[in-house]
Length: 87
Image (cartoon, rainbow, N blue to C red):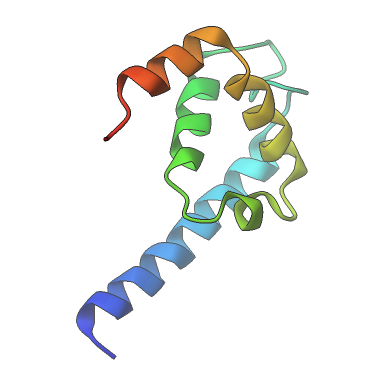
């Protein structure tokens, strides 16, 4: 194993744990907080965009999938993602 492969595996495990924690902490329907939509929803959805396999990311994480599905439909989110897209 190369050092790069080891770091990649560890990063994948760490991200899985992070998203498991986020899944358990989501208290709203289509928002992270019961009180409603916040910047956290945008941020969490943006973090999922970096996943190489979003289908796998959302498996077993229905609250995260629902939140991200909602946020990804918001015009301001789509504009922000397009504006900051890496070519």
